[in-house]
Image (tube, one colour):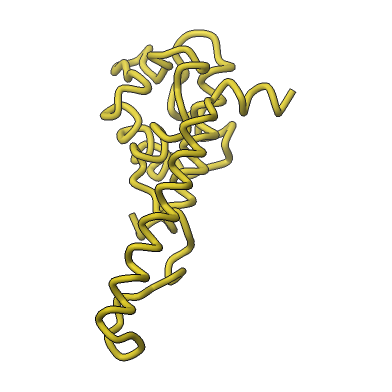
Length: 139
């Protein structure tokens, strides 16, 4: 994923794409979606592929092709989007405990557990919000 920036960028772009699709009537071509999001088409198509694999959107190929939501926006939790993007909760390097020089093994293990616990807090919070919540906030 580093080819197009951080995984948190992927998560943010995925949320924006889902909001546009929720507001769009019918199938939205990827070019139009990229234009609305002011994004590179290649980057956006990679994100859309992950959303299709996760069962959040569907793709229709061909001249009249594009993307549309499979589920109602109120039924798409932000945790599902997070999982589809396999995003990291924090910028690269946050609570990086992989280096052996800085931490003794027991300390490193405790910090790994803390990082995992923090991610679980984040995911629990994301489960409480849906795409519909984000749409309501922008109106």
